[in-house]
Image 1 (cartoon, rainbow, N blue to C red):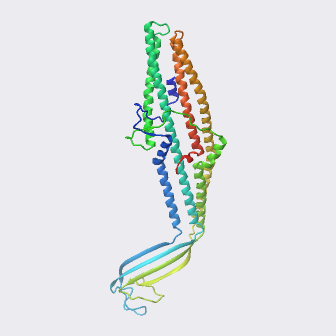
Image 2: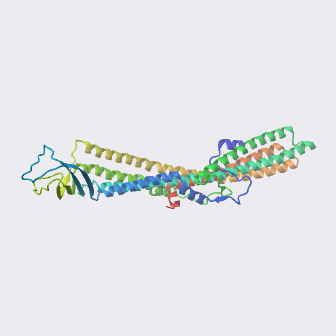
Image 3: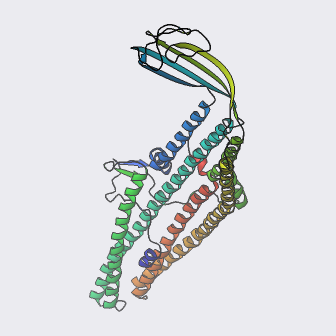
Length: 452
């Protein structure tokens, strides 16, 4: 039945096993330490954190629109000479009477005064955008926590299965020696068929032992990668056996309510709705003008031209003037602003449907994990009873065989039943631990485990 078990429950997320049993020089990590390391080095989390940093920089950019914008323009170059003054000059604008130099600098300043929400609503949208990106970071962190738990518990399950297979192999070796001894003594309780049957079981057990070892080594590499350890570091987990997590399942209704409060997906959607609401207002503000305070200063000087001080005459190459104004800038288009408003409104409505989906889907996810935890908990109890009963059966069958009143087949059947139920017992513990991990992930409790 070992073969049957492995076929219906292929091992996943196993990691390497300490073949030599020497762990004195290894770096041993508990589950909590593995989670901490995984959260620290995960490139997936780093990617989301860079998105968060980009959102923060965008907020700085939007905030900067509240401050004055200065434009500097400097020029130097040749200019035609001009003699005389504004009343009389021997030179003409249509003829060149020599070339001189000139320098000019222009400074323009625009300070927004009132924009009907163009700036303030952009700031609100950018602020909510930061909250969205932060929730995405938390979501990715909870995903990493769940993945690490799956690897860790999967490793322990794989090792428990390995222990069972090794014990079976050892018992088969002993049984083969006993059968050979009984055959030599001419016992009627055994025959050549029992020996061939034993050899068949032994070959299958050896085959699956090698497969489990391979799976363990591959999964160990995966876990090592997740916790960020390089290939030359000798690493193992601190736990030596798979044990049931000491935590009660709790109440389904409370878990559902907690999910609505703590799941980062809900925070993303809520903040996203607020952001799109602000963007709708930004688009709508395009219907109105922007009021601003403006300033201008211009200075130009040319050594070969006379400075004209008549206020009605402006010399491009030789002047000094400036001023301050209050103005309004109004871009009037034909349908463009309306289209922008409708686009922003559609994006917001789309996100409301995402919220509807989350409000229906997340409670279902919570319920699924909850029911799986209940099922696994009951299976732990029943499989434990079964493998203990199978063990008693095996002891009795062995005693009967030793006394010559029981066939060898009875021992084989009892041994295989014991192996199957012992494996099912550890499988149930694994399922329970993973179901609780999924439940913590579904309710958002993983957020409490994350040290931000």
